[in-house]
View 1: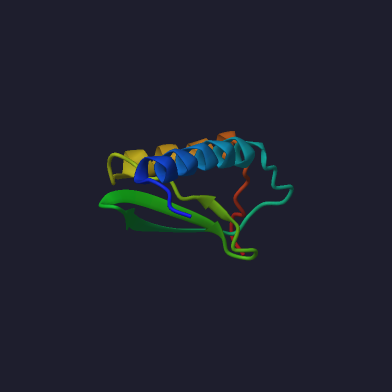
View 2: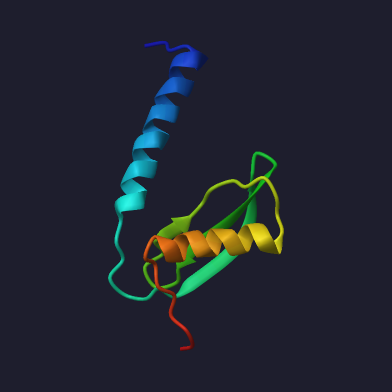
Length: 89
């Protein structure tokens, strides 16, 4: 079966929108052991945040800038979603 690039692009965009809605509803009941690293997706910076115990990916969204303010806002967005970070070990 052959599909056009436009069809594939639209399918991926729709799947991404469904995933974003699902991800916003995920509730994590315990504090996570946050691990973060800056990577690039198609030349765009992305702060990748995972739980160090379960490897649950908490953030993998490209951003316009790669500075402390942008990453700080990413962190605050996670906290606003109800994600609690473990402090200390």
